[in-house]
Amino acid sequence: MKTVSFILIAALLFACNNSSQQSKESTTDPANAVTGKIAPAIGEQCYLFVAAKDTYALKLNIVDTSVKGTAVFKNHEKDSSHGTVEGHLSGDILRLWYSFQSEGMNSVRELYFKKGGHNLVTGISSEATRADTAYVPDAKAVSYTGPVYIKGDCAGVPELQ
Image 1 (cartoon, rainbow, N blue to C red):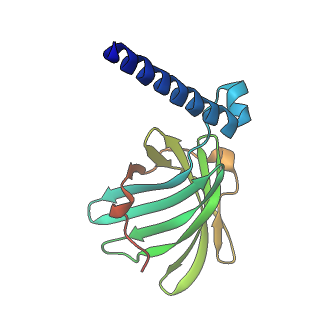
Image 2 (image 1 turned 30 degrees about the vertical axis):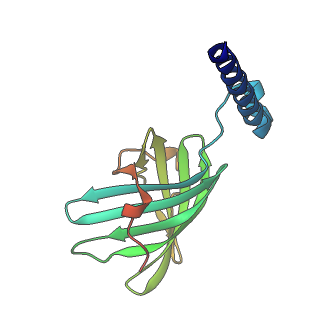
Image 3 (image 1 turned 180 degrees about the horizontal axis):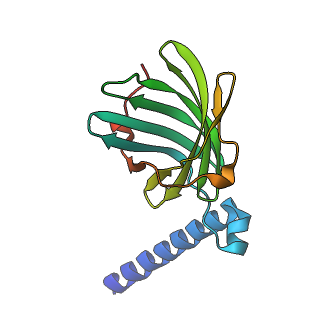
């Protein structure tokens, strides 16, 4: 009898806890309850691309569609750069403005990435320049065939220097 009572109490507690969890999920974003869509990724995410002795790293904080973070491009036999990124996520396309310092000069460059699973694929396109800023004149012409960044532990991302 004690065993049956214990099982019933455990089942009741599990059911109550499970329904309150479902209630939290549906009240967090009312659109999720109607559309069944999953909310965008939120929080810190890090991506690395390593080619021979070069290391490129992105540390991104994504909240809804807003993105902020840092980027470090460590080149073995060329000038490296590091700086901040800011932009937005639209569907699976990440558009960032990279403000960086290289060779003692401050510059800005527009970057595109496509999210796919645990990866970011670099967007490749022609660029135009105005003052210290390189930008993509036609976002529709970006092809996602560049280096693939692998999602990883943020502890492995090089820090800004």
